[in-house]
Length: 448
Image (cartoon, rainbow, N blue to C red; front, side, top):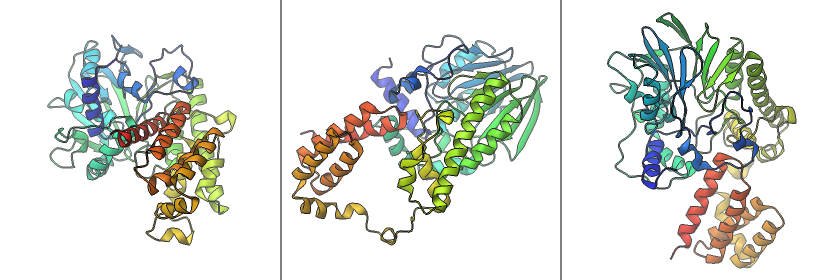
């Protein structure tokens, strides 16, 4: 278990890196099931990502040239006679251990660092690995992506802090290289558009643009070994087509096209940046194909509902994965993706005239609570609703009471009870993080 100071330091680095909350699963051997216990149990602890890979003693050997260090974002090394290639570099706090594990295998010069996309759990160790002659390779959209993160850096710090369960960060923490703007301090020094090929020490590398979670996402393909390093194109949960911390639109059809591009390569080794490799083309086709089909299903059902004039909340409630496509929701949630797809296509206006105006629904909460007879009446109804098993409706009721009487201890206590009930039932990493954030906020409000 990490001590408190180390947790805080790691959290600060995590937040300043503007991480996009990758899935964090326990280390698996190749013989293990493709459904890790963390998903099968239906319970996810958001703090587990801090310990990911902490007990790894030696680098994991994938084949004769590929090695892996596990963590909050994996780091891969390809060993060649003319220098080594590093693919992704994890977080700044984890990179030193990853470098120690991998250089114990080979301490040759670092010819190239390939960044699968510009999130901080992939770029955090670039400065540690980079040597004067090292090529740092990225897809050209990373320039704008890094600038986008820098533009909204203060907001992302707040949102990441809530989503990942850390509320404190020092104001004078140095900014990460992932939030530097294009120019002299630009992170990559070698950019490409659709494809970049090179050979090093007899090993062939083909780098393909495969947008999905970000517009700059790429896949590294080694044809001799039929090995595909896919970054965050795949992990063992429905993806974050929308992430609660906030993001530009993530296009479901990009995911599908990129997955098809990888499948067309007929890979025998699939190397995601979170979780364990998948070995064997049949296994890869089954898992990656089901993943693609799940995304296609959610996209198509959402579009169909939009064309039928359905509202987004109805679609969020009703669209569910069929059993044969149920890839789990321990990280991304189908309902969040439905709304992400809906608003990605059409924006925020839903066609209801009341939503054209700057007045929010919350602006009438006080009036409604007064009509109900005061906050105590609403608390009683929320308590009855919670006991009837509808914690979400109870939370909506108590939010109205809280808006009307923010200092009412009875209201605050009821909110805390509801949030704890939802947290106890949660099996999703991001949902759990935001519920924990709400619990902490409420406790602070209730403190003397």
